[in-house]
Image (cartoon, rainbow, N blue to C red; front, side, top):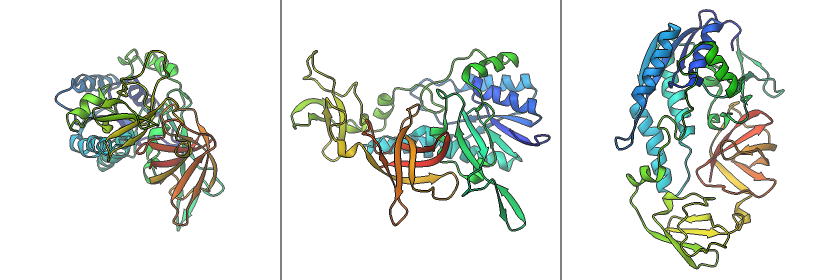
Length: 373
């Protein structure tokens, strides 16, 4: 994880789960000066919350490892940059990626900044991802900057392809990445469980958390219903015929099949997919063929893009994901005269949705991404 860990101070984001617990134990074994940090975030008072139990587990792990334990209260940052962002995006009829924003503004934003202010040389998380020194001809591993030499880094997918979390990390840059450690990126989930038992961690058999970053498995429609007024509208097929009704376009996503609101379908009819959302007319357009609008299913424009190398990548062929755990899709990246990127897929796609993150790869190397529009 580092060529000279002795005495290097690392603040590990401890969620109370097995991945972050093993991360702390591995770093301690390597010789780092480890401090465990539990991040307290905002949570709605109308939904059950287990943050106190999770914090207690994190504290117990630190006590067992005999390392310091801290709590960072980042409620306001989480509410502003993750929750409000998510609500606003849904209200606009877009499909947000709150986990991406949680990484950008909380774990590698506010947490990173606060840890550095308290003297941390590095921060570490339990993400399944790998950091490597750059070996690109265009971006050599070491760049000479006057009298100083600065190593450049790349983000790669984790060894466990099912658990890989690089999709959620495309907003990283060189300044932050150089001070990040991903201790379990080179392990599979079963191997992490084995390590947890070897270290005799109390979290070794704890189930993985699911759902929204930090907030767990919430009913998104129930959550949004508290903040976005219900605005009933019609569901129409591609012929313009009314086939059902909905509570508001904000509560549906392009590519959605279940809970679309179709009421006229018979048991022998193929399922309907949402192929378009018209926020102005408050109408959902559905089709039996999710690729009905093929002109919209192959090419996307990106905004708010970020390139991890801090420079524009070369135009050309890459792999892309616009959903977590999606099999990579072949695509071409090109830029207009203003340097704005467009991605053209080699084959038609299902579920391209404005607001979602599209992440680009060169093999296992994650080069960055952007928000689809």
